[in-house]
Length: 141
Image (cartoon, rainbow, N blue to C red; front, side, top):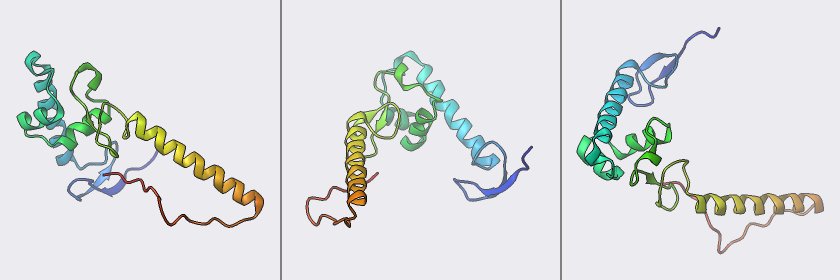
């Protein structure tokens, strides 16, 4: 059995005994209260077609927190036609993961090409020359 560890709360920075969550008891209670408000809002039939901004405006809970509930699987976005959060790269509305399928494919293809190039250069004993133009940099907003 593992002993509890001291850690800082990811939200407020308070020192606490880390057991099953990354948050102190006060922040954990606030998150649970926020989840209950969002969940109760979405249970109302008239609100089932709301998007994430409308849910945030109506419940006064941040879009980021609602997106975290969806990402964590606490809210199943596929049950709600318009509920989703933006892709971290292009901003397209998605219902799971961090990147949309198109960005994921582009990112994977770019990584694969880089890995193949590095492997080829390693096998031939050459050094990698970094391109000076047309370099695409991935960033997460």
